[in-house]
Amino acid sequence: MPVTSVRDWSELPLDALTSVFAGLGAVDVLMGAGLVCHSWLEAAKAPELWRKVDMGRGPRDKEVSTRVMCTMAKVAVDRSNGKLVGANFVTDEILTYVGARSPSLKGLALLSCYHVTSEGFTDLVAKCPLLEDIELSGCVGVRGDVMVATGRACLRLKRLVL
Image (cartoon, rainbow, N blue to C red):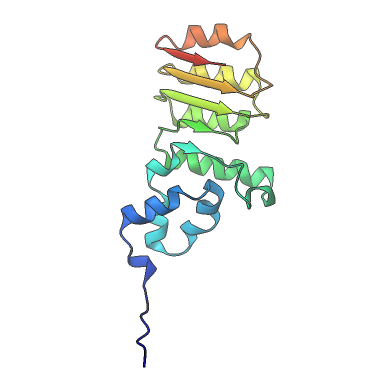
């Protein structure tokens, strides 16, 4: 008679879980994997998972309302421990939150952020004067006039990609 082994997935090492979660989208980690058990929640809180947040490409992402996405984006900002580098689901509200929570932010990539305006971006750079690396791509609401404000606020800026 074959022996059936029962695996306790909650006993996987934290680094192994974190590696697996890195392959999931942010929405799946926040709404699924991080809710399984205590050890999986701890792995889902690992700051290295939240440096670059992609909240717009997974199959479940389209099922989530904008309000819930904003709430989850704030959780991602908190979990990054002030070191969020890139995100693609961003609004002015999220930028205000990032500015308040991550004043020592050094790098930022905003990709296809259709809900970001010049005012929201200018507010962020004013609150994050240590920014050295900024990439803006597909952010149609951010106009050229913010570059002057960025230059004045971010004296350490080394790289700006538009």
